[in-house]
Amino acid sequence: MEISCAILAGGASSRMGRDKATININGKSLIEHVYESVKDIFDEIMVISGNTGILNNKKIKVYKDIIPVQGTLTGIVTGLIHSTNPYVFVVACDMPNISHKGIGYIIENTKNEDIIIPKVEKGYEPLHAVYKKTCIPYMLNLIEKRIFKITELFPYVSVKVLKDNPFFMKDGQSVFININTEEDLLLIERKL
Image (cartoon, rainbow, N blue to C red; front, side):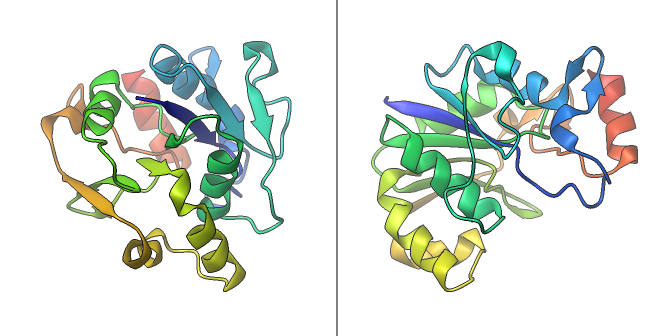
């Protein structure tokens, strides 16, 4: 399957109070942990961030948001526009627990839909999902209207929802864990 990977690293990190992507955990930045998890899966990996030097030693492309409206939807559409492939797996830079099995399960379930997204008890996981370039005009339209929820896109595109699955667990923890607070950071440091 022709699929790229976009690591979103442009969030405000307001709850953490500092740039999450560059936080050091066991000798690597948080974004490097995510990169290490995806580098053997995807031929094309890009980072969406205002910090163009964020992974410069990895020789991967870093793109700034295509429009000056910060948000998840803007990051996703930026990745889709820059991708050389029709599909993009999107992941957040603060999800160091992602796994090959979890990503593989999502990719295996990608047929011809516009969005392939996991849904667990707490809701949808838009930053561990696959998006097709066909979403671009609808995303841009929503951003123009100042609508930023991924679910607002669903009526306009074909969506495959993947229910909770054992592949979404790694070492007894959800692969969807993200780091928002110092407490989250302490918990994940013990696991990594």
